Image (cartoon, rainbow, N blue to C red; front, top):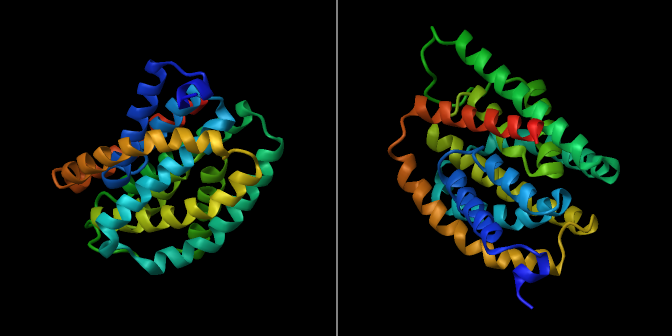
Length: 257
């Protein structure tokens, strides 16, 4: 029995999942947050809760490729500042998944993503007259790091949608393109691997889901190479606009489904 038969999906549906997996690779090495589109595709083809378990290993493959590509550009002080709050958010997200249905999950995550995008746009417009920072603002408040960290941990646990939340935080902290990608690469590799035991415990990852992951993982690689090629051709302003645009699109998709 092949993987598509196990999941009762057609060849066209598998093609959609493969395209979504390729987009995961692209988002990890070029436009973080674009994989919210992948999230929507997986949730449309597969049962919503099960789709999060299938998507997680695909994301981890993308994270590994991103770390290999941008490992020299990570800003570890920012990571250490975020991890405790993210851990709390993952625990809250796990509890939330025990009782929330798909509609509540989608509405909650969509609203959070749109709120984060709105706040980021407002902050950047307010600072338009100022010189664009060349380095990370190390004075970014602990409260902001904790609030974004909890939201990031929560959204990544319940819907693998932490990318846009962390993107908004990193943009607001003044990260340049390569620092942004290097820091987010390590962040999500560590966070996504830490989510695996929770997902297994909730029954979201099992032998069937891993079989489908094995078939989809190969499509992440070309997406990552395309992203690496594209990111060198995207200027900083366009990069930020694409990240914010992907966040708004992902949030709207979740709210309107």
